[in-house]
Length: 71
Image (tube, rainbow, N blue to C red; front, side):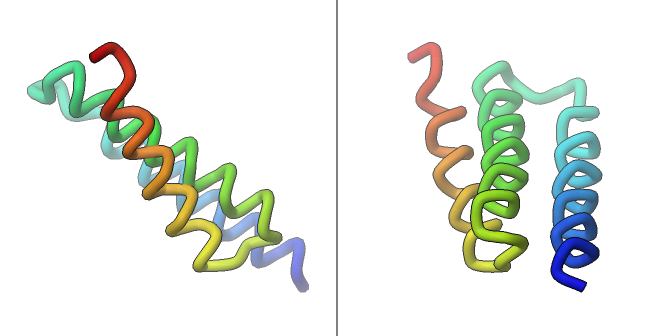
């Protein structure tokens, strides 16, 4: 059951990631933030076994890192 939850959270994060990266009118910084948040959400979900808090925390940290890259 735990692996199904992890798969569902990871799939949801990937869907959100691809949806956000499809916006062509975003600045490069906005794109980096969205990509970082998506990657962070997936990483957080995987590292914490699908925990919602881990997914949200990973997305927040990934978004911050993505925003700061290339400054």
